[in-house]
Image (tube, rainbow, N blue to C red; front, top):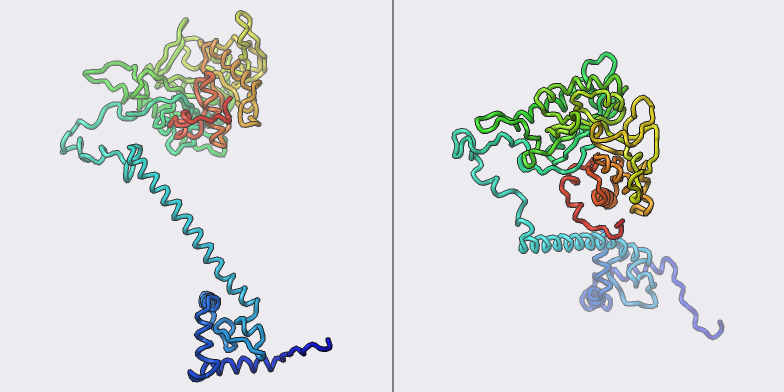
Length: 466
């Protein structure tokens, strides 16, 4: 506009000239108006130092145009871009380069704080006596390690005939698909499970009964005899070793509870009528040594091992086996629902199949199952009770559960639910708690360690409380 002073427009050559003049001033003597004083002022400024640090952190060196290095006092000949130490884009790029370092420091700092808190918590637990200072190792195991060994102090005093299950407390659980364990049978015994499940197959041309979840998992080495019958006989022989002090055969598999029977749950995977006599034949070593529970004419005699048939086990074959019956049926608990008000007559539903196939498709009254022919009464939790949509049992589901368990108890049978929720663990633990609190006798479990610890039984889940 007229009257305004004209603005100076700098060409590229003018800017370059200003840079050259600026750099020459840096190398001039101490009296130069543009040299040492300007450099010292710029180096003392906070912004200049930050730019210098950013330049070093990014691994770049200041170029001849002084992009990140020094600052000069503004003159009419010096463009703003030179005064600011470079273009705005390059300044922002330098700032961004420090962001990963800042994030790294935040992460490392957070980890340090968290680990410190855990350390303080551990020290507090040590102080109150809940945790050892260094490890959970049993101090007695490190004391006189050679005690009891041949030629050492205490020779012959360290071992007991019942050492196999020393210190193991029986837990009311069934080791589901026990043969999946690295050490079948003994993994369940070590955890305290009072029952194991074995899937038994009879295939054409095979002399032995094979063990596996499906045909793809079968091998000739993993048999009913090698995985269960022979190990049980050997274990019980040791637990009932005949000495000058003992001549009985009443000791079960658990040293802590010799009277506790161990349930061998046999899941018949092939035709039941063909498989049934073969299973009876395989049980002969246990039968000869009086290790099997049996039913006489009017009473159930509990022994070290109780055999229960499930899956395709034919109920009519169990009934036909009358002389000293030592194999029992897994009855369908979903047919045993009873109302709490009913006393003489009991309501029930008849179905053509339950946990096991009842005979050759015949319909049996729920009252046909009792302690003379059955031991467990079970069903799939998911199919019978249903899905827990709200993370807890509804009032209708709880009534169904209670009625089934009530009917099983009236018949003298032990109730069992399989296919229970396994995840999340809070839901699994809640279902376990509800089952036991409502009278279920055993839990069907996959996680042996979690079930055997019983820690889940002490945890309260108020938001899942049924």
